[in-house]
Length: 140
Image (cartoon, rainbow, N blue to C red; front, side, top):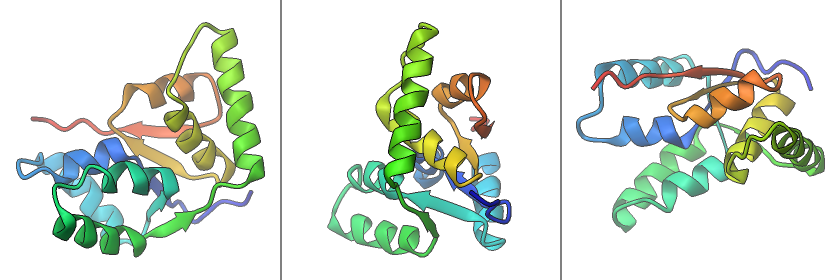
Protein backbone atom coordinates (compact mmCIF):
# COMPACT_ATOMS: atom_id res chain seq x y z
CA UNK A 1 0.00 0.00 0.00
CA UNK A 2 1.07 3.59 -0.43
CA UNK A 3 2.46 5.76 2.32
CA UNK A 4 -0.31 7.57 4.19
CA UNK A 5 1.40 10.97 4.68
CA UNK A 6 3.20 9.89 7.86
CA UNK A 7 -0.05 9.11 9.63
CA UNK A 8 0.31 7.54 13.05
CA UNK A 9 -1.85 4.69 14.28
CA UNK A 10 -2.28 5.35 18.01
CA UNK A 11 -2.71 2.09 19.91
CA UNK A 12 -5.24 1.78 22.71
CA UNK A 13 -2.36 1.34 25.19
CA UNK A 14 -1.35 4.95 24.52
CA UNK A 15 -4.90 6.29 24.35
CA UNK A 16 -5.67 4.74 27.72
CA UNK A 17 -2.69 6.54 29.26
CA UNK A 18 -3.79 9.76 27.55
CA UNK A 19 -7.34 9.51 28.84
CA UNK A 20 -6.27 9.19 32.47
CA UNK A 21 -6.85 12.18 34.70
CA UNK A 22 -3.21 12.07 35.83
CA UNK A 23 -1.84 11.67 32.30
CA UNK A 24 1.87 12.44 32.00
CA UNK A 25 2.91 15.59 30.18
CA UNK A 26 4.88 13.51 27.66
CA UNK A 27 1.89 11.40 26.63
CA UNK A 28 -0.39 14.45 26.53
CA UNK A 29 2.13 16.28 24.32
CA UNK A 30 2.62 13.38 21.88
CA UNK A 31 -1.11 12.76 21.41
CA UNK A 32 -1.87 16.48 21.28
CA UNK A 33 0.67 17.12 18.53
CA UNK A 34 -0.66 14.24 16.43
CA UNK A 35 -4.21 15.53 16.80
CA UNK A 36 -3.22 19.14 16.08
CA UNK A 37 -1.37 18.10 12.90
CA UNK A 38 -4.21 15.79 11.78
CA UNK A 39 -1.84 12.80 11.79
CA UNK A 40 -3.74 10.57 14.23
CA UNK A 41 -5.28 7.38 12.88
CA UNK A 42 -7.28 4.50 14.29
CA UNK A 43 -8.90 1.21 13.31
CA UNK A 44 -11.81 -0.93 14.45
CA UNK A 45 -9.88 -2.99 17.00
CA UNK A 46 -8.50 0.13 18.70
CA UNK A 47 -11.96 1.73 18.76
CA UNK A 48 -13.40 -1.40 20.32
CA UNK A 49 -10.66 -1.73 22.94
CA UNK A 50 -11.04 1.88 24.05
CA UNK A 51 -14.82 2.17 23.96
CA UNK A 52 -15.50 -1.09 25.80
CA UNK A 53 -13.52 0.32 28.73
CA UNK A 54 -15.61 3.49 29.06
CA UNK A 55 -16.87 4.25 32.57
CA UNK A 56 -20.38 5.23 31.51
CA UNK A 57 -22.57 6.02 28.49
CA UNK A 58 -21.66 9.72 28.51
CA UNK A 59 -17.93 8.97 28.39
CA UNK A 60 -18.53 6.29 25.74
CA UNK A 61 -20.40 8.75 23.51
CA UNK A 62 -17.81 11.53 23.96
CA UNK A 63 -14.84 9.29 23.21
CA UNK A 64 -16.64 7.70 20.24
CA UNK A 65 -17.23 11.10 18.63
CA UNK A 66 -13.57 12.05 19.09
CA UNK A 67 -12.23 8.76 17.72
CA UNK A 68 -14.56 8.79 14.72
CA UNK A 69 -13.01 12.12 13.66
CA UNK A 70 -9.61 10.43 13.15
CA UNK A 71 -8.27 8.86 9.97
CA UNK A 72 -9.73 5.35 9.90
CA UNK A 73 -8.17 2.24 8.39
CA UNK A 74 -10.22 -0.86 7.62
CA UNK A 75 -9.32 -4.46 8.10
CA UNK A 76 -9.60 -6.38 4.84
CA UNK A 77 -8.81 -9.88 3.63
CA UNK A 78 -5.18 -8.99 2.92
CA UNK A 79 -4.72 -7.52 6.42
CA UNK A 80 -6.18 -10.67 7.97
CA UNK A 81 -3.96 -12.90 5.81
CA UNK A 82 -0.85 -10.90 6.63
CA UNK A 83 -1.78 -11.00 10.30
CA UNK A 84 -2.13 -14.77 10.20
CA UNK A 85 1.28 -15.04 8.52
CA UNK A 86 2.85 -12.68 11.06
CA UNK A 87 1.41 -14.64 13.99
CA UNK A 88 2.56 -17.90 12.41
CA UNK A 89 6.09 -16.54 11.85
CA UNK A 90 6.31 -15.24 15.41
CA UNK A 91 5.16 -18.56 16.85
CA UNK A 92 7.83 -20.38 14.81
CA UNK A 93 10.33 -18.16 16.66
CA UNK A 94 8.79 -19.08 20.02
CA UNK A 95 7.04 -15.72 20.43
CA UNK A 96 3.36 -15.60 21.36
CA UNK A 97 1.62 -12.25 20.93
CA UNK A 98 -2.09 -11.51 21.54
CA UNK A 99 -4.03 -11.70 18.28
CA UNK A 100 -5.41 -8.19 18.86
CA UNK A 101 -1.88 -6.78 18.81
CA UNK A 102 -1.00 -8.80 15.71
CA UNK A 103 -4.08 -7.41 13.94
CA UNK A 104 -3.21 -3.81 14.88
CA UNK A 105 0.40 -4.29 13.78
CA UNK A 106 -0.80 -5.84 10.51
CA UNK A 107 -2.98 -2.81 9.80
CA UNK A 108 -0.01 -0.50 10.45
CA UNK A 109 2.24 -2.58 8.18
CA UNK A 110 -0.34 -2.93 5.39
CA UNK A 111 -1.15 0.79 5.25
CA UNK A 112 2.46 1.86 5.95
CA UNK A 113 1.55 3.68 9.16
CA UNK A 114 3.79 4.35 12.13
CA UNK A 115 2.40 2.76 15.30
CA UNK A 116 2.71 4.76 18.55
CA UNK A 117 2.07 2.64 21.62
CA UNK A 118 2.86 1.87 25.26
CA UNK A 119 2.82 -1.92 24.87
CA UNK A 120 6.00 -4.01 24.75
CA UNK A 121 4.37 -6.54 22.41
CA UNK A 122 4.72 -4.08 19.55
CA UNK A 123 8.45 -3.75 20.14
CA UNK A 124 8.74 -7.53 19.82
CA UNK A 125 6.68 -7.46 16.62
CA UNK A 126 8.81 -4.62 15.21
CA UNK A 127 12.00 -6.59 15.90
CA UNK A 128 10.59 -9.47 13.85
CA UNK A 129 8.77 -7.68 11.02
CA UNK A 130 8.58 -4.49 8.98
CA UNK A 131 6.42 -2.73 11.60
CA UNK A 132 7.48 0.86 12.23
CA UNK A 133 6.72 1.64 15.84
CA UNK A 134 7.54 4.04 18.61
CA UNK A 135 7.05 3.21 22.26
CA UNK A 136 5.94 6.27 24.23
CA UNK A 137 7.02 6.33 27.85
CA UNK A 138 4.51 7.87 30.23
CA UNK A 139 7.10 9.43 32.53
CA UNK A 140 4.93 9.01 35.64
